[in-house]
Image 1 (tube, rainbow, N blue to C red):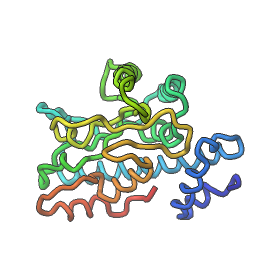
Image 2: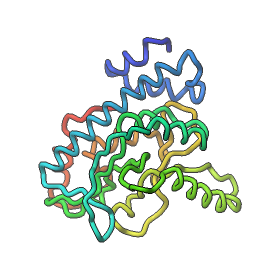
Image 3: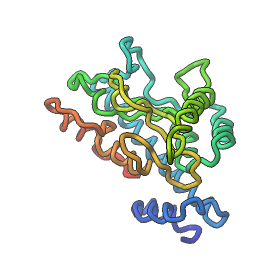
Amino acid sequence: MTRGGWLDRYRDGEREQVWWELRQLGAAVREPRFEAEARDVCDEMARRARSNVEILVARLTAQGFRFHSNDADAAPVVPLRPPGDEITELVAALEGEYGPIPFVVSSWMRIVGDVWLVGTHPEWPDSDHADPLVVELEGSRYQGYSTLDYWASEREAWQEESLDAVGSPGFVLPVAPDRLHKANISGGAPYGFRVPDGCADGLFVTDHVGSFVSYLNLVFAHGGFPGFSDGAGVAKIKRALSQGLLEL
């Protein structure tokens, strides 16, 4: 695990092994001898993820997909919003308030931006039931509303609930509706990241808890829609969407 090894190996296709090594380090990945290249790997992951999202948005648009809000209004939504001018300050404020955040999270914030793939496909009316990819850390589509204020209110509610909970696993920073809310159905808690977390990869909490990178690989393998959907022709649509997407 020497400097000059991880990034080259990641680019050469040893991605699973590189992630395994980074995860084994835990928070020690922040030691000076590891940190710079570990962050480089996470930045490369984010660039590959952004390329995948851009391809998915283009393919869905060409297929007549309408990106819209997850409510009765179905208001149009821009599916990919690049990071804003103040994203570096937001990353610093997030770490200042919640402690260390995984490198993959700061890389996503700085390189990818906010992603919202909820909507309606003309040949797949219930595509919103297939848990479309949503990751909104900057909250850029909520004009005049502070993401930091939202997170603070969610943490306050969690703190009140956790007073009565034995062995509470920690605060989950919410970044997406759960799979039911995406389909405008009353559901559970939002998806999000367990914080604080000083590791390279992060724990992403959905219906399950696991690596954020593993979650993204699952999402892209299913064309941005990892959930089950029983419509005719859905498998064909997913295969067309996922073709040639980059593994992270």
